[in-house]
Image 1 (spheres, rainbow, N blue to C red):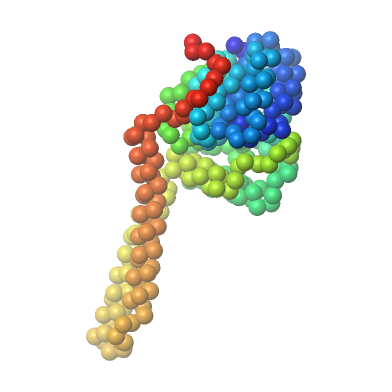
Image 2: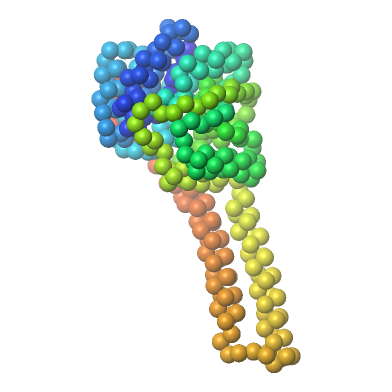
Length: 309
């Protein structure tokens, strides 16, 4: 197989048919040996039935149907596990990733690059709040991680079979695909584009999902939160020690004190707050360790038309 296109799907019934049509037009100009893999991530609309209808008419359409919603990054991982292409394209199903850009991505990949990712110059159709949070998150992530994760780059990219095989060797449950690809290394380059608005439907990437993805990214590629918790502990201990000295000075030297001094309550609340924050940070890391130790399957497939090799 020359090219595999991996598309996670969650309630995108209005975009499935136009996406398939545009993909077919683009891929047919590149090769006749390609496959389009739709990964249905627990959709509750007609997405799965439309994909199955396409698969009956077009033998190049493959699908994976999850038993429930496992998340966007896990859906991408499932597509990578099942893809057979020498080159793998990862893209979203809302047509904000233009299929026509695959031609340029494939051309750069043929030049010898193992990864060609896309950088967004503009994000049309998105709220100011979402643009700002995305912008500052990626810049914060770049500062606190020990690897170079490209700024303003999403999952829309083309990767080689070599990179795909390396990704299969990374078994963590909380996936951050673009960070993993950066960690793997190899020769990488990028293309810039203006991201269009959604073709139809509403975005399923809520702020809750964005926060979860941000936590996965930070805890997977940075120990800075743990270091902040440690430094905060020393800092608060120092402040508490100075406060203790001041309390003793007030009690025994200047004789100026009041029983039940309010600062006692303030110091207790301050110390308790820092301790709870530190415990919460440590808990986030421990919960991820626990998920990996359980070694449950990353996803469960309900149905697929992909035959095992």
